[in-house]
Image (cartoon, rainbow, N blue to C red; front, side):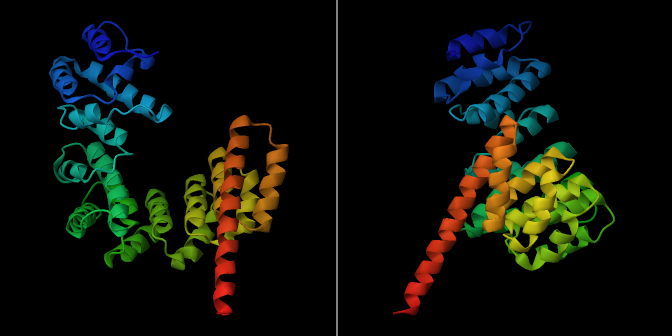
Length: 316
């Protein structure tokens, strides 16, 4: 149901009326005049109303890719309520605008709420990746990395340190492997999980022994992180273990194993995923398997093309 900006403004002013999720479309792609008017309205809304709205905006943007609530969420970054600030950061997960780096860094270093700092640390990860592929200025990347390294150091709250470590996984900074190693060697399961996430993001196959060891962990959270890392690092040696995990008791681990097999490719992966596609009676899982097979076909086709190019160059 499409709603105009004026209609959603009227609805929001009536604080006794619940916000129907399908009515927030009027807040998508706000123009400057609408943003000014929305800003004035936002400041007048009770905190519970602001929380409900920002949550709905995040859910609707995730469910409907054509909707863009970026302007409203940017406005909410400065909200006096930490719950609203955290959700605003989380809602901006797709935005790659470097202008968001400074607000995120301010939140990381000075927000009174650990939850907000954690979300800021997580949000900065994509900017580290953008820096590694030279899509943002080197000076900005350095500033981000310095902020995350400081946040990931001893003395910060565990959840912020873990989020900072995961974001630094994308970084080629010399300090990062030691940070990952310390977290992995700890006896703290959440830190080990974050280390595995960082390993997967590192694009460095040196972490194969650690990843492969945790694929058979008794802890579902560690199995899940290791399975995802195996796919990200293209560790083809893990294919037999991933095949075993297609019968895992955890649905999340099963689905991650399907995804990683699609990333790794090869005859074994193609065969087991094909068999699973034929036997699965779960509609959602069937789609995941089909997506994995589609990606597998692309991966194997790319490898075949690369081998053809290498063979052709040998004859020159």
